[in-house]
Image (cartoon, rainbow, N blue to C red; front, top):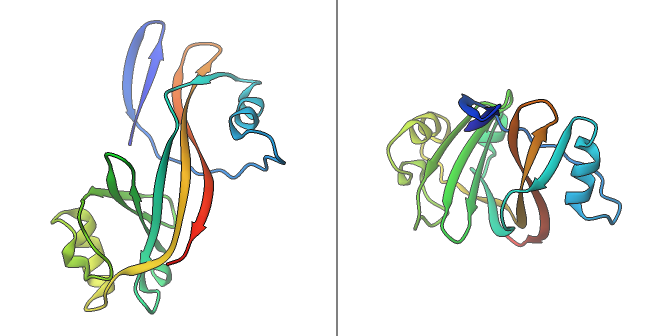
Length: 163
């Protein structure tokens, strides 16, 4: 993932690691909670329109990925279908692929770093959905009062779904 930082009109592209935070909303709109949390340092504005995503987390029947400290998430939207493997320390490998059906072996994924990382762990075991959900993702732009700009997104659960 890359992050665009702007300083007095010029921009720099830097590598960034996404982080997930859970904020209690207590019935308030999530965007308002994020704005309040960031207010001491940032001005938060809408960064685009909200969109609904479907999420599925995949693992083997015996939880091989979980026991290896990994999480494999499949995110689909109107124009996206991404697989993201996340390690315990937050390192991520992402691949785009569409039209895959689960359960299936890891070699169903397109060739590349994601598949290469999964094959030795899953071996001959199929990946299958272990959890599903839908979420609304709302992009926000956080402007630092001094000079930088960063983009963030709010993903609020819509509903859990049966696997």
